[in-house]
Amino acid sequence: MERLLCSCFGSLFRLPVRRCAFSGKMVHGLLSRQLVTKKRFEMWPVFGGFPTRFGLPEFAHVTGLPCGEFEAGYEVDDKLKAKKTDYAYWDKLFGGRRNLNLDDLAAMVVTEDSMSPGKKLRLCLIIIVDGVLMPKTQVSKPTLKYVKLVEKLDKFFRFFQWGVVLVDN
Picture 1 (spheres, helix red, strand yellow):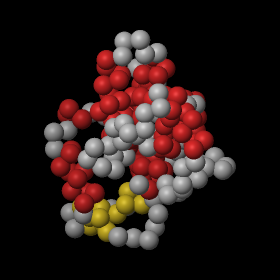
Picture 2 (cartoon, rainbow, N blue to C red):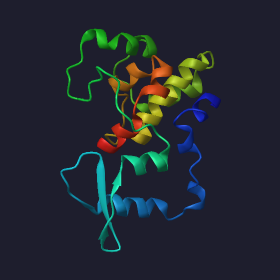
Picture 3 (cartoon, rainbow, N blue to C red):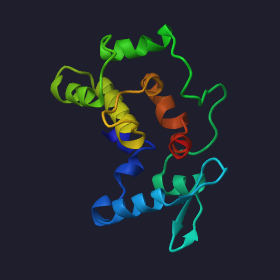
Picture 4 (cartoon, rainbow, N blue to C red):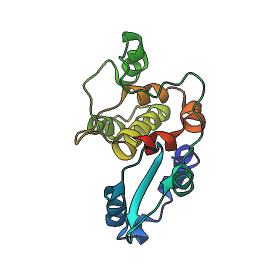
């Protein structure tokens, strides 16, 4: 837990959500009343009848997530076809099981007493990314791209530009 709290995700755990009872409704209102623009990495919510710019710098300031340039060779496209070799770490982490959802991962973390702390951390990171930061469906499943990223935790924490991915999502 200490490693997670000291990472770029730590600021998300320190947000004063208990002191902001209305924040969920307010954030939903801001995000659902946006102007449509052609600019990438910017949101323009309408607040009090006035458009307000909310871009990467503001997102980085609020969340503490890295919002810089991606390293050379990183493919942003989610629609790339997965190759069989892309599942090597997936199979190692999940024991070859391909049809898992995030509830299954949470159950593994809670019930498997012999699981190493490193594996527990990786499963928790997948749950945070695919279940909290970037959920795509009602029953969320691990995303191959992020499962591959947790293999190298230093890269996952230090070099991946989470803010850019979240704002662009």
